[in-house]
Length: 89
Image (cartoon, rainbow, N blue to C red; front, side, top):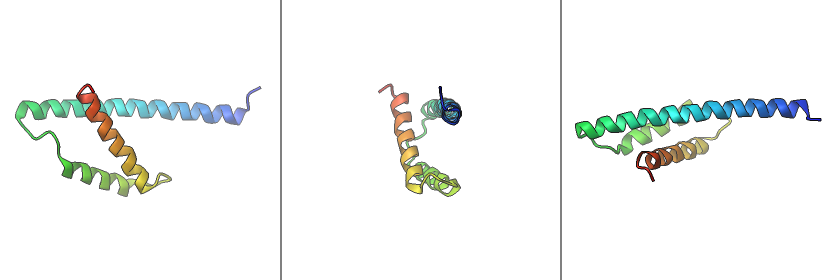
């Protein structure tokens, strides 16, 4: 017999995980499109200033319980993952 509270919590977590997965895939598609535009128009591919502004904005928008350090770590990882996915590494 499964604990109903446990089952309900796991189902909710599974749903959030699927939403996160869809959001990451959507973000990757948007970044890929922007990357292709930058290549086609000769724009600089990497913009460290944009990344730092993005991290600052997300940290400020965060209402927790994720810490500011956690926000930065999460999105730095997402940026690195995106670069690897774009370059087929």
